[in-house]
Length: 273
Image (cartoon, rainbow, N blue to C red):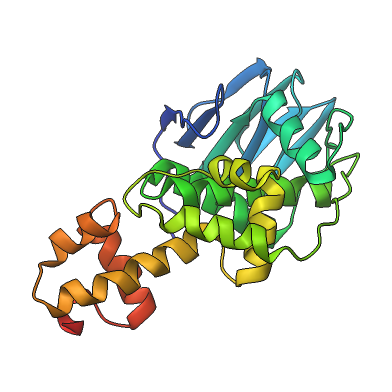
């Protein structure tokens, strides 16, 4: 069987959800990285093929589905480990960003986070990191992307950091949940961040999202989208076009609206009507 060879291509991009951070979506065959380092945490998810790299005096091979994490300031290389090359998505997360997540998790200052040389092989975490990277790149729903990013980074820290931050306990708080619900539906077309929700109830971003998800059964962005869909039904029944309903409901475009509508109701808006 012939394996398709990856052609060298890379796209670096940024997101306002990761101040000072960089992301890359790339594939390589001929290119080989010379020894270098990054000031940020390098968190790649290998999508296909395999990458060989030198790190801390040893040679490693990261296959599809793995997370070969590199600490800030650590010299490393990178080249193909199989004939096809490799395709991956990478987060370059600033130290202060990762540190803020660790501090939020525990409710107090934590030591600087460090990861061992071991390649992380954790299928659930790989899925979370991939989803976060894809959501940030797509840019359809910033609230969903922010939640996915927080979920991925916090899961990485509590499972694989050298000093795993303890998660601060938080009890039931229906008052705070109702305040967040009101904030989410106040204007369904207005952009909203997890930080906005957290400030409204006096909690860290992580704990606001965790409290809401635990009490409601849906993450804040998912609950908000469900409210958007519920309120869209009346307009659809009245004959308003799906394009106009999508805009009035706060979805970025008709395809975004249709995708969520079909997930919730099993058919696209036009067929439902």
